[in-house]
Image (cartoon, rainbow, N blue to C red; front, side):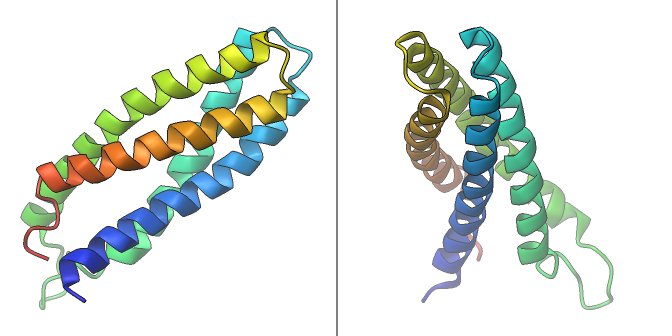
Length: 149
């Protein structure tokens, strides 16, 4: 398998594991805040989602890529690292805007239509994650993050 495709698979694995951790915690938080106003529940759940996701994704991404930016001398290839960080942050940023709008709107809609809080959280995050995955993969491809891999 081409190295480029392995890099895409590692990125997607890290994203999905990050979302797997955040979906469980978010559902628990949403249900524990079910007595709150819908907009409060939705906003706090989204904040918890981001904290858990970025912590998990960041750690996994770091461990998968720490050797990639090491030179034979043992020093960090700062130019390559900086270039790739700009590309990945840009790709994630585009995806996060779409994800946030979709997730917040959908969870708020479901809560105001009398869905259980944990179901609203699970459904909104699942749908938003699918949209996010498509957006991220298209962005990474367009920004040519793994063109030299």
